[in-house]
Length: 113
Length: 114
Image (cartoon, rainbow over all chains, first blue to last red):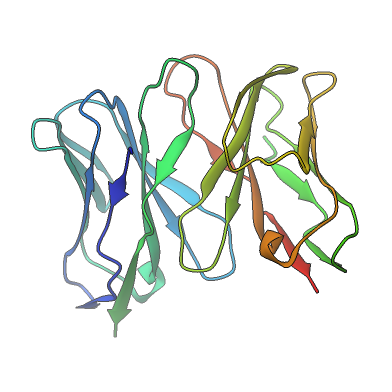
């Protein structure tokens, strides 16, 4: 069973702090990793993708990937109340047949003013 | 560049009725995916198309579910003989078939079966 695991939270951080969101996955051959943000009642919004080991930065967001440890994380610097949402980790397990994404249950982030 | 659109946004139906949802992908994208999301869970993959070909179906897609993409553009997802357990958000996403494979989601169709 291929799985994506996230701590459900809620993770509470003060405004201006760094929020750190973590995700582990079960399949060593996974190639593609994504972070989505989902506000309550809305659909997931892609915020980061990462494909190789190391860090990838985009504005206030940094994704980190460690394939040996089967671990991917998302750092949000200078957290704002508008960042309060559920963050979904998604992994493409690179199966022979398709490109389906496997999602974790999401981590709820609350940024307090 | 318009995003993925879905119609309707909300659907309330009685158990046993059939429902059909539509998805229009981003115009340059030739891959189209359907997912289902229930409260407190991440989206679960249902099926995907490359152009008009349905290339993968999840075991979640029972025989009451059928999806089509007849001309490789928009797609429909039909649920026959709806059950209360079908109540969920049905999400459509699209992507290119080469490059980064990033999937972009539409706003979803929220189905309530009473």
